[in-house]
Amino acid sequence: MKRIVIFASGSGSNAQQITEFFQDRKDAQVVQILSNKNTAKVLERANNLKISAFSFNRSAFYDTDQVLNLVKATQPDLIVLAGFLWLFPQNIIEAYPGKIINIHPALLPAYGGKGMYGANVHKAVVAAGEKESGITIHEVTSEYDKGTILFQAKTQLESDETPDSLAAKIHELEYEHFPRVIAEILEKQ
Image (cartoon, rainbow, N blue to C red; front, top):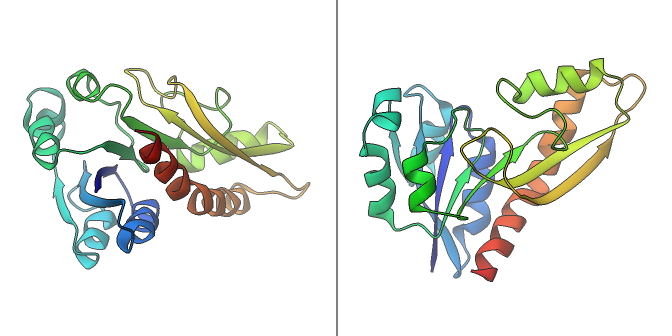
């Protein structure tokens, strides 16, 4: 049984989709959800899903091995960032080379980097008059959104597209593809 650890910062809708996708499977399961916000809705979702969940602060993440040790205790085969907004620390990246992935709500390399997440991305894409956007699943490195691209899916923008309507389309792509791509990555390990 492959083991997945999820990091999330916000509501956790992707974390829930991933957890539910693997709940009845025999090949993999989500074993832990971690958040950098003790008020994040993802922690409530984890509790409802009966998944071990913890929150941590900036110092525990960047200045100590506390979060690394929490992760190591679960012996994950894959670490999944699902709406996690902090740059990942080198100690965890080095401990799990090639085993940390992230989903980004745009077609990287466009609209990536520090500050480019969620509504910020959708506003920028619409303001630029882009004809398409999408999702990118990529490996995590010590730079925002620079890791090897593993998967992309696209959606067309309508002439009257708004950041909110684009966000809804992007969420649909995330829910459709992210759990499946995670399963494919685990099968190849």
